[in-house]
Amino acid sequence: MLDVSLLGTGGMMPLPYRWLTALMLRYHGKSILIDCGEGTQIALREKGWSPNPIDIICFTHYHADHISGLPGMLLTMGNAERREPLLLIGPKGLTRVVNALRTIAPELPFEVQYEEITEEEQVFSFDGFQIKAFKVSHSVVCYGYSMIVERKGRFDKERALEQQIPMKLWSRLQKGETITENGVTYTSDMVLGGPRKGLKVTYCTDTRPTESITSNAAGSDLLILEGMYGEHDKLAKAKENKHMTMYEAAAIARSAQVPELWLTHYSPSLLRPEEYLGSVRKIFANTIAAKDGRTVELQFEEE
Image (cartoon, rainbow, N blue to C red; front, side, top):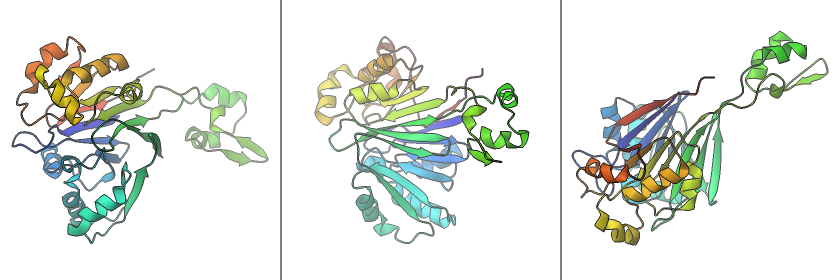
């Protein structure tokens, strides 16, 4: 099961009814935050979740509405006596930008680790899942992210018995270990069937439409995209400022053939995004004008 919560849906500035864009994903005891604008801590509290278990924070880019909440978040973690390292992932300049922000949060009881994205597309692998960053098109260097949860094949008891693999090794092989015993090497592929469908969530804000978004969104169970403007006369402004309209986001969802699209990162002038869904859904029917705190539990397909 993968928990997905869009903590905030606002762009540019927090509003009394809309926090800045931030996404939390929770899987198998790990918590991943993507972007941390001003007010993200409050959005977490409103959700009933704690910042202390966050293991990884990814940044799409370094505009203030996506990173200005980080110093307070770090201080809150420190005040909660966190000791485990925190990993930060982001475009080049991550270490410099965060160290500048840490002028007001200089002493922390835990280590902050940095992974800077250096390629057009880059994969970071963890236990049971991957985070893939892919470059998009904004006024500064900006990346979208896919979280990909892998799922191994089902244990095949008959194959294990046919190959006379000792039963005491089954559980270890099922976990992916390679074991040598009495001169014989056993590998996990000897007892597992083919890979099963996992889970995938793709998230992207602050960009013009790009092929990289469509290609990386393909196969996603959920696509979350910027829909900064719903007004048809704002297309020129979206192009000028390197943002995306709801209609462009819907076209990407249609091309990527995803099951569901959540819109986010609304302009402060866009008071009621849901008013534009009638037109947007003519392009992609299963579009949601997400509000702060929208959450889903994605489940593995049963076979």
